[in-house]
Amino acid sequence: MSAESSEIVNVSVDMAVLPKNAVKGDVPILFEAKSAGDFTNVNKRRKEEAKKMEQLRRQYGNSIRYILFLCGYFDVTYLGYEAAEGIDWIWEHRIADMETLGL
Image 1 (cartoon, rainbow, N blue to C red):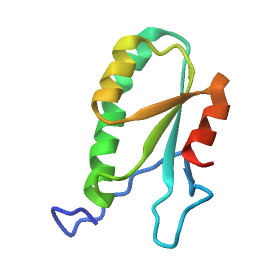
Image 2 (tube, one colour):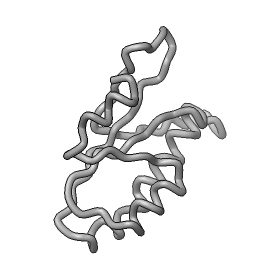
Image 3 (spheres, rainbow, N blue to C red):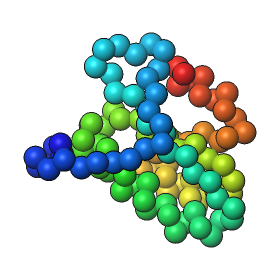
Image 4 (cartoon, rainbow, N blue to C red):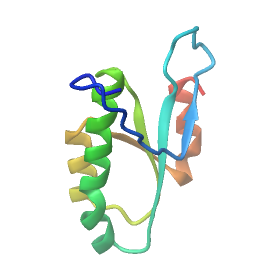
């Protein structure tokens, strides 16, 4: 349910993972897989993730972790926009970075 109303909002994600040190009641880290063959398409879609993050914060609070798993071409403009929304990312060629999340 949304914090602002009793309306339930379904938000899809690609993966939900609890860190190894999670305790009962912890919310999993949410991942969205994104792939792009060129820079043009990603800048058209960047607002989608911002909207999803807004919905997730309304549902779960500011501590929710929503991370993009990126493969392909994502430029500084796209990454800056996502960072400004509090969205982090991990590159597919640096999958070991997930260890920093306790995964």
